[in-house]
Image 1: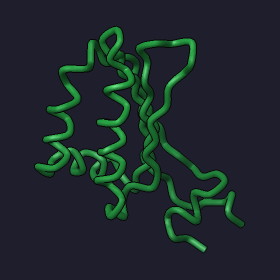
Image 2: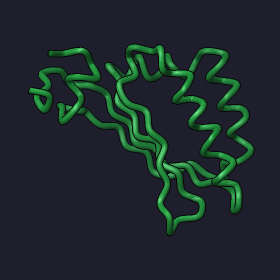
Image 3: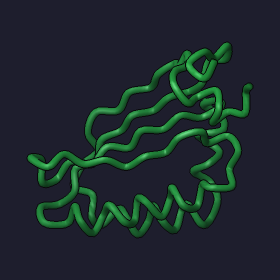
Image 4: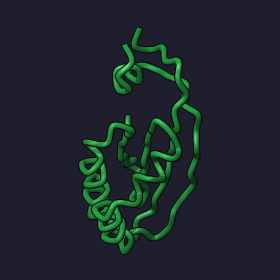
Length: 114
């Protein structure tokens, strides 16, 4: 039953606006964060997305075991270095949304629930 999940997880959707012409430089930097989180068991999902018709928008979609684990993930030196490299490319932070993720397809598998 991969679509059923009995836990509530912390979800975060954030939007970044790159400086004009810099979106394609910013995306790989943000994907480095995804790579750096590969061994973090509290990070269940971390994606970076763009929309073709939006030349500056980038969205981060994340699911974590808790808000505390998300907040803690921002502190390691490796992540701080990635953030510092990304900042010059970011013109603004757009809308951010915090969610209580109840479950869905794949989430049970990602969290290790059988």
